[in-house]
Length: 449
Image (tube, rainbow, N blue to C red; front, side, top):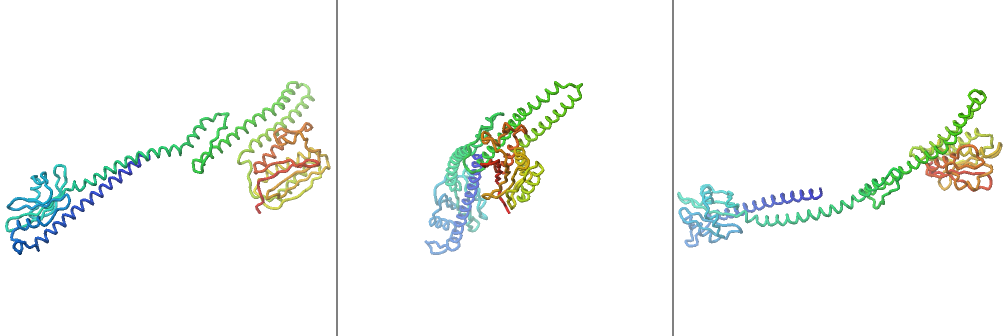
């Protein structure tokens, strides 16, 4: 396409150049002819015969003296058509024109009135100007013939040179455009090859991005898309693995009790019913937790909007008081507005508060607070329980991580807390405290007002 457009442009320029230059040459020829005719008319009106010192007595003498005194321009011949008499000329001999009956007929046609006409003869274009010289009943003529084709020969040579240079330019431009297009499209080819190399289970291929142009942005977008797809597949596989692993035990319990159920024993039926309902509740809670973790990687998992941090902290404390009979304290409160999802933060804090209540005794102290640290918002829950098992500290926020003494829950609560913190651009951390447990949520959001 580049070669075609370049060729079309060069042809258009060449044709336009030829037409304009040809018109200019024609105008120059007509201007020269008019000038020659004007000079002859002036000589005819004011000229003096050098032999007699008087005005010319005959047309023959007038034509003879004028031809002797004037030299024709390039590609031009001056003619004297005498009536009667022999036709003479001044300039280079041109037998094709001078012996042509078409030329003579054209002169005879223009003799009475004069004028300028174009004559095509043997593939050559001539411009003929005729000025009549009347003497009595006879009419002679001063004739100028200009070889227009010869005047255009330089133009034709120029156009041949232009055509050769244009052809060479098209070849060079096409080669350069092909090389440049290959360079420009190489990221697209790499993107295509990477896309072809992706299989259902392998999304590890990535493009090496260099530059800052639109194609580089496309490559980055493609890599980001692969990251999101890989994350979604990992989340999906993890959800299926977790669900399959954790639901297998409750389902086994349900099946085992149903198999040994004595349908004729009302007490056995009632006890089994209560046990099965409890297992179903546990499975429902497990499924709910897994769904929350599966949604945690979605962009709409959190809905940040300006939230008053002080009001949020007091709200968490008031809700936590209903969880258990503990000594609930406010350790501190941050004042200001931050862009965060208040419902998700409340969910995370109440999860921490619930964990704290499970690992403390009635009346023991549990503290809840918030603060602004290094321009970022922090929330925490502190308890005075036995603390975290050292063997569990390294994987505390991983899925299904729980202490051996913890026979409740599925070990997903802290994973949900960490997922909520990560969705806010932050992290959940375990503080190193001498007594009890303190888990802190450090958010990426800062106070805006």
